[in-house]
Image 1 (tube, rainbow, N blue to C red):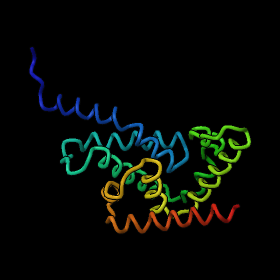
Image 2 (cartoon, rainbow, N blue to C red):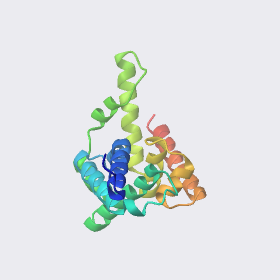
Image 3 (cartoon, helix red, strand yellow):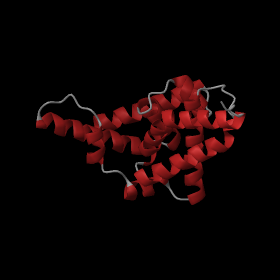
Image 4 (cartoon, rainbow, N blue to C red):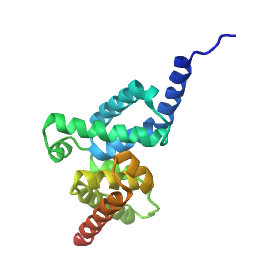
Length: 182
């Protein structure tokens, strides 16, 4: 029987963290960028940074929260380094809204109800596209990743009160947009 070395144990632990949380990172980045290729690239960048810093992970938050914080920073760095506006890129390289609505479960039964649900998804994505980057991140972490306020605060580096304020403003804006299109 061979003894496991500390680096080998750490490598196995990190591999399990990646297996457990990679889909959530990709889903968040896909929802944020609406570009599957870019989301994949940013996911890989996030995991590479996490791997390089795994020895420094202190466990003060969950591994997912730590990874989400890295993902948010990788995403910010990407946009900052490119010096282009997020909105131009997502509009030209975005996931088709009809395709995205097919990913969402719908309890609607009739074709009319399916069409209505699909149109509502389009309206929500349009409203989310109009949010500020910080509001959009908080909104997606809450409603796509289903993180609670405390987890979002840790992931974004914001206070819980600031997270609540951004989430409240984002929800108000999405609701106003939805009501304005009816």
